[in-house]
Length: 252
Image (cartoon, rainbow, N blue to C red; front, side, top):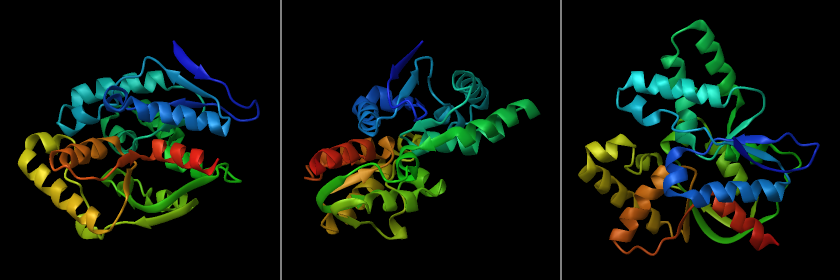
């Protein structure tokens, strides 16, 4: 079974890959993606059988479990058409980890096809020509340059997309602040160090004068939100999808 949303007949629907932790911990991000696609008049399909891509098992060294999840993912998303994902870390798992997990030439070929079909939300929207959205957000916006986005070379796309937002003043941090301290399993194995890195990171973000923090990755966002809440920091934080949706609504 799958959920579906209609769009223009001349635009190919996309299949939605919503990471499991987004589905469970930040469902508003998935809803924002659907609302953005509706605004773009693009149809979508959500394969209900999708589960975890295997990122956590892979990072924990459980390659048997990761392969099982990889094969299920490949079965769910077999077929033609683009696969849209609002999470670079899971996208990175498919593009970077799956080739190591494939155990046959056939699996390797399937992984290669799948990798070409997968696209990050920022890549997908930025690639539409002419650009389909009017966006407005007056103020200083901090872009969290997540490790997954950097590894997949998404930063130029993210910055290019935000450059299309009227009134937005973009700010970032230098390379010395490369990580927010989350790192998935790292936050579980080294919680004190993870929190210390995150607190130092947020202090640097506040020093930029940013009025809101935008992240392409929900995992980093949840980590930073928890630290901000513990220190009562007045810094709103949004995933890219809800931010773009709000910016489109502000533009009218």
